[in-house]
Image 1: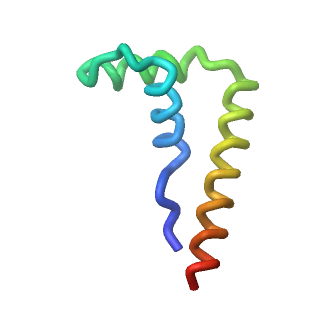
Image 2: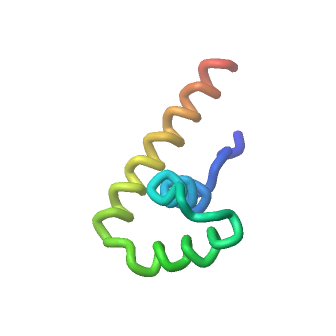
Length: 65
């Protein structure tokens, strides 16, 4: 069973959701800046959300078997 999305990819999605106005050319630098200044509690909250997403993915994969 392979995890379909890494935590970094998950964070990149969150960054894009919060900043839809950033152009594709500027995304890597903007994402790096966002990570530099993100609050620790936000990282914990995103980690919890990511874990729940992975748990749901694993459950769906197990049900299919």
